[in-house]
Every structure is written in structure tokens, then in C-alpha cells.
Image (tube, rainbow, N blue to C red; front, side, top):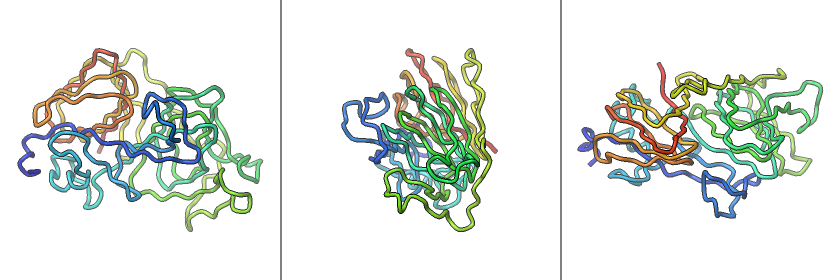
Length: 299
């Protein structure tokens, strides 16, 4: 069946993977389960990492894992193809905090952060304060507001304060260490990082990205190695295809029109849709001022 669909490639909506966390938010959110009482701390939108696999939510390939789709479609799914076992080059997820901050972590790869929701005086951890020797005071803080965008370099401590929903993207298969866990007892607060992991001791390690021109319909927000993040603010965009991309709506609703097995696919906040490299001409249409982040591969 998969082989027969090579001439009928279509956008693939993915089923979010929800994870309850001690720091998760129970407040109403437009992104997932507005009536739920569960404290969702992490919502993985696109992932093949940490033992988790995104699956197709609708269409002829419903239920298929991204590793299966990538293996069977090859370069038509992602051009150039990824090595075996790496069907997605990035992990994209939402992280939500309620009345507790998340843990302090350090990772071996860079990450892109875009703030979706922020309560007054919400903050993110942006590195180390050299004047402090104990956690959590050792973590430098920066006030966060909706639409703020950042790039965390590899090796810098990071944390998300209370009252935030942030969409994050990073390289797949990166290592991480927990330096401080707010839910642990004091005798096990401090953790030793992974051997060989170098921590950035600067006070301002993160890159603060400039807001895009408000009149721009499709603006570049930031770049990581092999990844370009764009902000789409338009009622209509036409694409020729040829590049693998993941679109994540953050406001409004719309649809993708294309040829193939699923010619029309609905877009709404809180989900992710893969646009395969071999999709060909397609358009993103909206009557409600769709705003979306587009994660696209670059050479």
C-alpha cells in the first residue's frame, strides 16, 4: 500500500503525545484538552526520540509511525533522506508550566523557543548567575512575554518558569542532564551532569531573536543547523514543494489544499502537520487569519 501511494503523497497530520508532569498546567488552554483536569507538562507534536514515535492522525496512512513512512517513501518524504533510524531531523513539542517551574536542564544541542502563552512576570532560565552557588538561585532569569523567540546554545542551563506555554524545537537524539529538580528533596537536588558535558558559565547565553516585520506574510524567525523557522501570517500562501517541512498552527484555523490521497487537510492550533518533500504544489488557505510556525530544512 505504501509503495502505491508514492504518486499520491499528501500532508500528514500527526497525533500529539501528551505527558503529565509535576510542573504541568491544569489551566484552560486553547492548545489541548481545554476541559481536562490533567496537568500536561509536555506535548510532543513531532518526535521519533526518547522511545516516542509520532503517528499519522488521518488519511490512508492513519496509525503509521513516522519511521515507517520515512522508510517506505524515502526521498519523497524527506530530501535528502535521513540515515536509517532517523526519520525526523528535529523534535518539536509544547512545554506548559502551571504554578511550578520546570526542572533545570542542560542539553548537548541547541534549541529554538517561541513563547505562546505567558502570565505576568513569567520567566525563563537563560544560563547561570556567577554570583550564586546554589540552585535554584544560580539560574539566571529573564522575563518572558508572548511572541518572544529565543535560541538556546548547547551546554547552557535552561528552565521554564511558572505560567508559560512554549513551543520548542531541537535536534533529534540529543543528550540532556538534569541539574536541579524542583520536585525532589533537598538531599538530591543537585545532579552531576553527563560525563564530558560542558556547561556554559556565561550570564547571557541565549540569543534573543528580533520580532518579525508585522507586515510580513512569511518571515524568518531564526535558524539552527539544518533548520529554518518561519512565521506565517497570511490568509493564503502557495508552495511548490521540494523541501521537507512541519507546520504548527498557533492561532486561527485554515487548511492545506493539495493533490493526492488527502486533497484537503484542516489546520488548527495544537497540532503538527508534515509536508513531505515530494508533495508538489500545494496551498495554505485561511479565512480566520491563520498564524503558524513552519519548521523547514535548509542545506
